[in-house]
Amino acid sequence: MQTPLSSNDAITVRDLQKIYRIREGGSWRGKTRDILALNGISFSIPKGQIAGFIGPNGAGKSTAIKILSGILRPSSGEVRVNGLIPWANRVEHVARIGVVFGQRTQLWWDLSVGEGLALLRDIYGVDSGRFARNRARLADALDLGGIMDQSVRQLSLGQRMRAEIAASLIHDPDILILDEPTIGLDAPSKLAVRAFVHELCRDRGTTVLLTTHDMHDIEALAERVIVIGHGRILADSPFEDLRTTTLSERILELDFNGTPPELTLPTGATETTRTPHSLTITFDPHQIPAPALVAHVGQLPGLDDVRVSRPSIDEIITRFYADHAA
Amino acid sequence: MILRPYFTAFGLQWKIGLRYRIAVVAGLVAQMWFGAVTLMAYASVYHAAPDVQAPLSLRQAMTYTWIQQSLFTLLPLGCLPAIGDAARTGAIVYDLLRPVDMWNWWLSASLARLLGNAVPRAVLLACVAGPLAMLMGLGAWSLAPPAGLAAAILALMSITLGAFLSATIVMWWNILTARTLSPLGSYAVGTPLAVLLSGMLLPLPLYPDWIRPFLLAQPFAGITDIPIRIYLGTPIPGGVVTGLGLQIFWLSALTLLGRLWMRQTVNRLEVQGA
Image (cartoon, chains in turn blue, orange):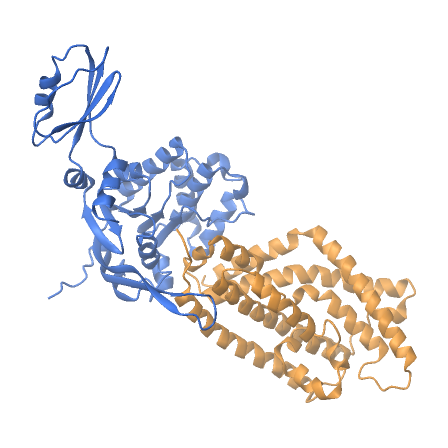
């Protein structure tokens, strides 16, 4: 017996399936082939959570995002966003969400940022008092003061992305969908976007669904990661859990002031690389804890420096995709 | 206010249409030139065959040509440029994300773009081809005044319907653009159809007898041909009521079918990538 779709969740998805029919050969009588983009995914996101949606290219992320935004109809399955069926109640639904597609622009190239925001005010029917407050708040938080009067075509990518995010929030949406919001941004701009999203969630309780290929976005923002591959959900957990289950190994780097000596390692540790002045050892902390291993190598002649590190988030994800053949 | 988004879309495209002042002047020069060449051709044809009972007098043919030239940019030559750009870049997904009725939203923008282009040109050309030509002693070549007060009022009603009809046909080009994700097809189909069937190339009353009823009954006649006939006071088979009736019929039919086509398109629109 299935539980009813809960109204306390901002987003609920059950058994979502999407089949694209592709015409091959391009002619009128060409054969069609079905591509299974989403193969029955289910998840729900409670109000006020930041959830990261990751997966390799072609995994089905964009399809899921488009269905949740109401611009694509699934082949089967149930979806509720704010209690509404996105594609069936399109107008009502889109009034309550904000969407940023990192590779597209929703502002008008010919207009200034301020004029664009004023147009969106009219489109969403935001009253002038609320508009003035939101505009001031967003200009302050996203540092738009200096670019309000500039036309959108003159903005740098970082400035434009901040303006795009402001544009998606002028009508106080309950849910913000960010599709690759940091793509192409420099480090300070990425940090600014992350800090803003974090505050938005904390101060206003906005639910955020984020897709990205930048794992640092996920690490900095997402309380929860949904990994999607081959149209299925491969993992749905806090990021730390993904780290421990996927790649719990640690790395020990040793620098020497001469040629590194030959050494015998305890079970659970293996030498991975050797250079004229350094050694890298990978070890499983469950078999050999880091202090024990450091003690084991600590008396080696010529040892200069010792560093213990964890695999980077990119390595973890790469391993995860490889393990699941995603 | 529930109509605000549509006025906003209208206002934006109206401003964009007016922004290209040099294009207005350049267009005016081109249309004066084509108008003048056409007029000379009519003059020589009419003088070579003085006995033929033409459906339009020479003065009427000239006036028809002037009005047609001045309203060139009112024709549905292709999709709304903004929608063409959005289809190519993929930004068209944002149009689906607005809490508005898509048909009315695009229709307001399309109508504004047509009017923003056509109204300044029409006013300028009317001044040049009408009073100014008269003052320069080119009275025989000038734009004739309307057939009467009633004709003027009815022609104004009719051209208003014509503008809405044209914007509705632009909507069909917009949907075609959204389906193919390229504006090129809409121009390839729209421009020749509009130029030929609106009477831009040759006034519809001057075609052979047997084809005239068909030309009057097709939707493009309702954009400028029927209003011009009413302005000139030339007889329309079935009278002015038939003319206005045809315009209203096409406006309703194309809106109804277009909305169905749009709904079907939105349901299957699969914007690729990101």
